[in-house]
Image (cartoon, rainbow, N blue to C red; front, side, top):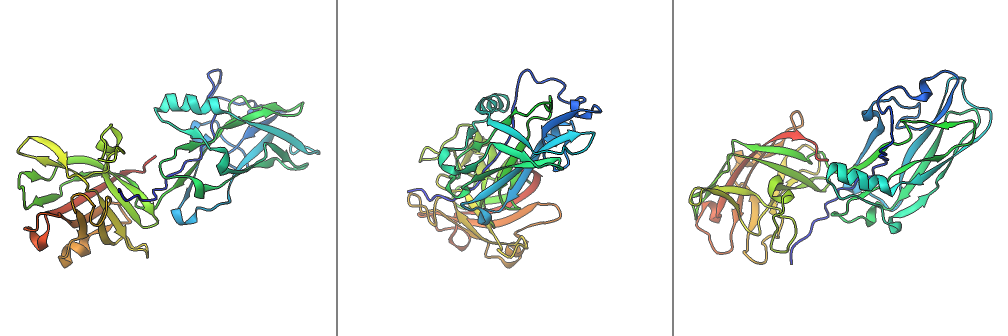
Amino acid sequence: MKKHFNLIYISLLAITVQSCLKDKFGVSLSDVPATSIVELAPLDNGATTSLDSRIKTITRLPSTLKAVDTITIPVYIANTAGPLNQDVTVTLTRDTAAIAKYNIAKRTNWTFFPENTIVSENLKVTIPAGKNVGYFTLVVNTQNVKPTDKYMIAYNIAEVPKPLSISTDRFYVYYKLVVKNKYDGFYSLRSGGMTDYQFPQNTFIGSTTVDLVTVDDSTCIMRDSYVFNNGYSDPYNNPLNAHIFWSTASNSWNWYGYFCPVLHFNSNGNGQIVRVTNYFGQPDPVRGRSAALSPAPAEAAASAWDPATRNVTAYYLMYDGTYKGGWMGSKTWYYDNLTFVSDRP
């Protein structure tokens, strides 16, 4: 049976997308003197009109996930005359239609958090007298979220007491909870090398892109981004985690079945790679394939993540259940040179 890793990648996203939304980047009524407008604000002191100001990302390590996990969203009164002298109650509402529109626009498959993950959700927010801000708090159990789940939340302002008004362009906000380690990211794989001692026609592919995907605080799967995201499947009919190579015999790219490297960084956070293993098992139960950090001292020392550039160098071996004729009994030697491109969404 395939060995599963608890890949935690969760996203809490508060957004509403409405076709009738006007003046998205222009002047809000809250910029007009003598008005009292209610907004959903990424910051306690309100927000600007730019789309980027609608987005807030919360990043956590897998070890910090917990059964009672609180997300706090400020609800702000933009009032040029100063705070009101009475409490104000603002009503929010879920907006599942916004998630559907977001998925269409972004070609994604997010769903609203299941009821069994929501611990507390009070849609009535009180802004106290003499204050400009109150807080909506959503409490969720992140420990119950599986690695493959794609959950999102969406709320908008449904009601405010008169004479207050709802902002025309600041009534929504994106909130993301990103759970990953510092090595997680999107990388280009260039100028490395490999040697297949059994089939020399299998060579290093000159140009591809890989994801480093969080397993825990100091471990990442290193998988080819293209094959994972474009319909290729592993023998268990899951999206393919693999490390591709070039075959000069067939003049095409390919991958070793039941093999994908997992990089284990030093738990002290210095970026040194201390182990390399196989995603499918050590060894996998079908081909008997496993991975190991290069036994050459210089190569092992060079295998690391650079905190200044976020680039990664990795030297490692793949062992096979039937072939033992290569260096140190391995089938394939790898030198992977990864250049950081961007954070993964």
